[in-house]
Image (cartoon, rainbow, N blue to C red; front, side, top):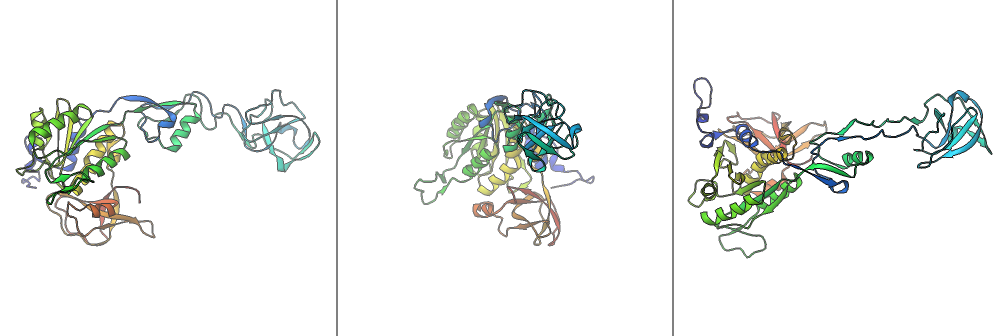
Length: 417
């Protein structure tokens, strides 16, 4: 990048669509146009993986009564130690209908309601029973009693809006008695790729053709990120055909994702096709490697994100831009989706150029629990096999100096360690 005497980036004056934007600038411009989607109510058993559109509050205390934490006997602590009379039973789901008076004990099961008047439970193993007579040791008030509302109380917020629903969250919602939850509608992403060189997997490829692959990987990520992906047919290098397909995709989606056709070659027709549909270009190119041709804009019928055609470039930029866009649509925190971690570099790296560089890498915890990042030797933007072996991206800032082994770097995780 070219800097003036004050250290400012000269390339960043004027229309953002014509400037070479940093990753942070480009992402901010994109997110400013992305709305949170509306909500829908789904049954509890269909809510796994969804994002809460509304917080969940408790309608009653849990447990709704003082409950026994053990199998044993409910009694009055003031009556211990001593001999008591067993007068009844409180089982889970079937409480004792009377009151525990002085000198009484009630047989009780784990989870059963503590009878009125009782204030403690003695374990079965700590008592000695003969018929209906029970010998009890000294027992403090509250022993083995789960108090009413010990888990949560009526009116308390159990789950906040924006939370992704996993098994634990669903269990908590079920404990509150909810049969359905208000969740954000899944973002619908239409994916359009183009190029005479592409054919679909399973077809007989021509001598100069390759199989369309990036869109399948991105569609898989979209599903795992909470969206719904719809892959459109691969279009040929024809502006009119691409425009027709894009129009259909915009009509039925929350975002049209265009893969390929966005560079400056004679056969790159994606942007001209979208301009026919009234596209307002907001991001024209990004100072990122790989992925400089990434672009973004809004058409009258919706938002459009354009990614490079090389598979690794498309996947890197999907992680950098599409992932936080989906998070914004779902009502989550886009910044959390792009959070980086500090890691120790396993091998030296050369100095970086003017574009922020994301290197495919393997990140692992060493025996000391420290995160170590191994950058792959070949970072060619067409190599999917390298990407498949990676679980992280090493971020090198623009104009970063050469780094020695042991230097600290930022890594963006692709999946778990």
